[in-house]
Image 1 (cartoon, protein in one colour):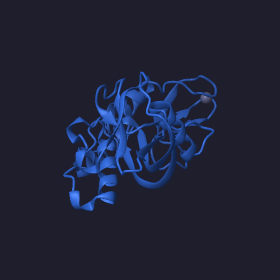
Image 2 (cartoon, helix red, strand yellow):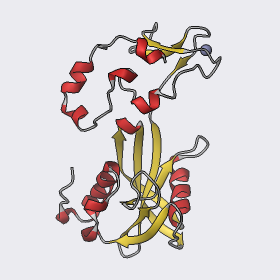
Image 3 (cartoon, protein in one colour):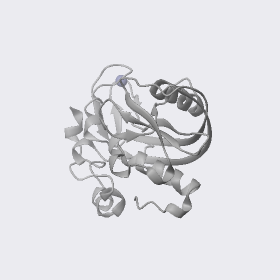
Image 4 (cartoon, helix red, strand yellow):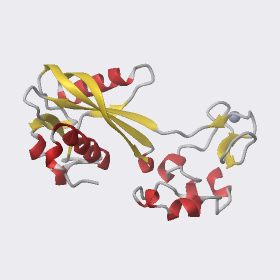
Length: 216
Ligand SMILES: [Zn+2]
């Protein structure tokens, strides 16, 4: 694949590695894949999606960093994160509904409902759809609790606080269990992802700042 033909020491990589930011995201900056592109994602970026010719990673006119370009048709393949839309569905009594994941990654661990935003919906529509699919709950998204970046997964996670306005908690292959947790009873060691930890932590800080969950 063309990624192997790039300069082995891209400008700025050592600087990025030296920063604490990168340490928090192991695997985010893999020189084999080109600066900033996770290896697993680079593996699916071999050919131009417009004409089918091989892609080449390198400098291009008017681009401020190396890009995957097509020498045959000139099309540039930009690699950007995808948005994961999630909600923290809150019950009338102030508890948050979490689900125990039935699929990898994070099988058996707890997380808030969510998934990839579709190309033809708004973030709120996506959050409502994913929450219904995974938990059986109908929610009304409210305030944004936070936005969280996971470069090694090439995703950005948005978390809405959401009011439960209908539906019934439903077990599905994706959710082995759906149940409410009080802010003081979050199963912190059993939360599936760092982005879920951060989102639930930030929600707890909103509703119960006195609890000060020790999560970074
Ligand atoms: Zn092309």
